[in-house]
Length: 342
View 1 (spheres, rainbow, N blue to C red):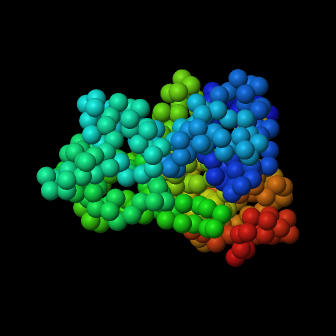
View 2 (tube, rainbow, N blue to C red):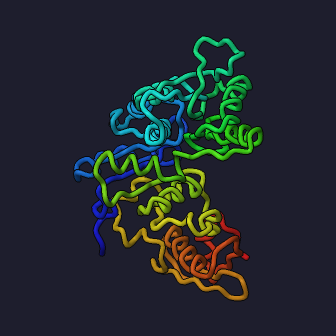
View 3 (cartoon, one colour):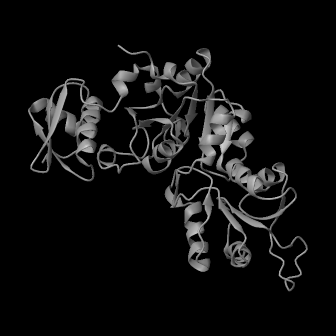
């Protein structure tokens, strides 16, 4: 029996919505898991692609939900975006900000000069000056005029940094347009492509790991295309949790580059033995591919069945697949996983 998954890593880089909390409630056991990490001396960093709130606001929200959290434990895509800018621009350079005041503050903290308008010699806008870059983060108040100013700057050829490119933003009302939707508008208007700072690109996760000098961090998240793909891009171990948006069918069909090393029910899985969570055949289950159909046999925990199915199917190439159950236990497991039996 292996040690706990937690014990093999020197930091936890935790996604928020779908991993630590869902809507207005903590994921069950998240508080106890974070406390256990602290007791083991494993630092925690809360990593979020949402650039609209400051680390202080994010930490306050987590505390309100019942979690111990400090602002210095939060890493946002706004911080990552500002870091990317600082690495490419001279100190004091003007940066046109499309986003909230939290993003403005991060640009200023990086030693740069945030502006809201592009000065082209005709606008007469008081805070306008010719920027050397555009940075774009989510804000519910972004409108056409904001995008128009950014469009003018981008057409002049300046650096463009997007804090993240998520097309949708999960809310209690459902999936709403995310920063990526606004990025797509500027992409269509300019023909340009931004440098992306948030997940699945490396800057956010690299910055979070560097903040605690971690060399063996574990990324924990519920989204294959951001959290898990980001971990793969950064060369970090990842745990996919099934407490958020990803379904069993999504996990099975995950393309190469979006596949986690470990899979668990929720964040508390980090306190379980690593061998029990590794995506590999076992746990009382067997799977094989016959005539393009993935067959499951055996008995045990449904998530162990999913790990077995993923391991066998990914080895065969992956993609969408029909799954067939052999026996009542397999049929029950597929039902629990919401996978229809072929």
